[in-house]
Length: 230
Image (cartoon, rainbow, N blue to C red; front, side):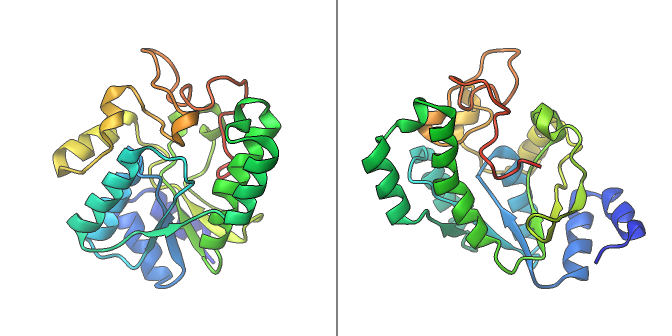
């Protein structure tokens, strides 16, 4: 779908120009998943302010911080465009909680990954049905698992292109954009929560810690939930 030359041009473009090129080549089938992180708020701002033909959606796991819902409402009010919300299957959640416990994810890596699969991966799979390009807010410096991720590449597992336009941005680049463009953000970020997931699975990080250290802090893992394993 994208030639090597096209990919190179997109990778060398600014955030806005890269997104424009993607949507010009594919006027339909481009989607963006936002967790309402600082990175995702930057991309949301560019998409909505420029009225790009991109479906923006978020996943409500049922265990988010209250601040997530407040920011989502503020986004909808500011941009006058609603972000679509996907929820986990209620039968899956009920079965997991009733059989293993409301906070079973603390007890084993297997339980935690199952919870993430039910609350995040399965709803994501539904949201990506029919998509041709999936835009994310991933950055290389967030974790070792993301260091070598390309900006734009075909994801054979999901049968679509995955576009990570901020992959080479630094955290300061993100903060500068937010400040210069008056982008709304979660107040939790200013309280030490850099990478924010579900409330029971997120803590603020200490100075010098990796941005992902506050996620599932009780376990030794790659600090991924399964959404971006590659």
